[in-house]
Amino acid sequence: MFVMTAKLNKKKLTAVLLTVILLIVAIVVLLNVVGGSSSQKIRSSDDAAAYLRSLGWQVSPTPLEVQQIVIPRDFSGVYESYIALQHKQGFKLEEYGGMSATRYTFRILNYPSGEDCIVADIIVYGSGVIAGDVQSTAIDGFMEGLRDNAPSPSGQPK
Image (cartoon, rainbow, N blue to C red; front, side, top):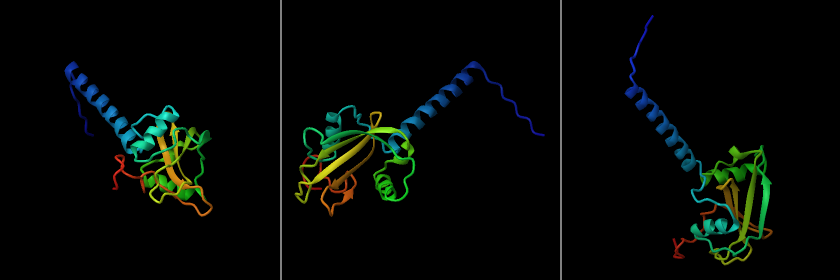
């Protein structure tokens, strides 16, 4: 049998507690950064438009739609490709399954091909972006990530 003892005084105990607290804070910050959630807070449609502009998109001043949605719990079938698109962007949408979120939809005014039927959706939980896409509303449309074909925020080609 192996027994180990340690003698802790108040200074050592305080140092250990501070270290544990700092470690917890660091983990929480890291999860927010790595989890794909935007550091920009989205509390209104103006904030949502500003977020899209920060990615290089020119958008209509008012959203086409602001809708409360419930994130599905099951991402099988047609949702599998959507989840793959979100993972590619660093978003972990499936972690929000069953929760209510807000979807903002804006018309994109500067899509590189010049098409006028392009919209951007961002999905916000709390005040963080948890998913997003750019898509064509045409019959033979497409869906891609928020940054896939975005012009640079300065308006210059990438």
